Length: 352
Ligand code: SF4
Image 1 (cartoon, rainbow, N blue to C red):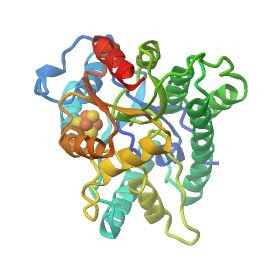
Image 2: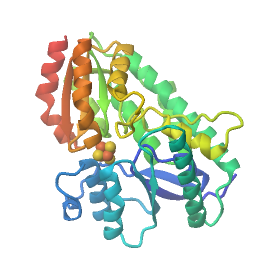
Image 3: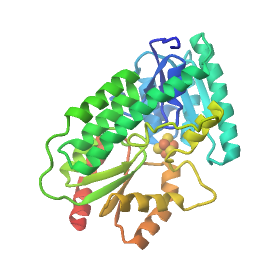
């Protein structure tokens, strides 16, 4: 067992190598864009910048954070690249590190990112006062996979079962997994899986596949349900994409394997497959077909270039396949989903 610091490290991106934070003895704490803090990030970041990133900065400026031993930033998109600069201005004494994340996932990218992970291990070892050992990283991968597998079992049950409140129960489990120590997150997910989710929804509502980036608020899912949408699967950075299993081939170098697993996970729109440029649109079709969805709701944070740039090709591919799509842009608040309620209801009625 490695040294446990009982301290938390903040992070903001689903690509963060959580197993390494844990191997260094820290509890990863995702700074979700949920806050009552004043809207102040505009003092440092442009108005037309991703609201996800701005709300994270609002939390930093409004001291709406637990005690953090440091902050891990991923260079995942342009907005995320701006965040550490602004963070260092508003919280001068904080320890921070920025990890470069390749936009592609070929062998050279895997090698490059493995180097970044080794560099991160060195930084975390300095912060914690003891080196991050390979053995501890391997133990943490196993524990992490137990959580990932439990959440995946819970998601399968919710996707298949149409349980009353099931989608927001699952979202709560994701939020616990993102912000609480691992044993608590595993316990929570296992308890819900074994004892929760009993009451089935009555009647048959049209099945919808939800796709996009940032939608962490459980109330948003209650609102979808209240609008008549039965979400039968989703692909969100704050949902099923948050905690993905890490599988490493026997005999592969630990950091190369970890790099390959992280870059090879179900990708966010910021990652690009140059061998298959339209891959993301094709994946949306395949996922929608696999869960028998009658339509797709595409929900993105406003001003998110990676997602909005892919939208025309996603829209066109779905049109050719005869799958209706509803596009919603939000600012990471439930209020913004609430404003779309009439459009969601009209879309569901059209599917029905
Ligand atoms: S929502 Fe888009 S712009 Fe914002 S952090 Fe994620 S990928 Fe970047």
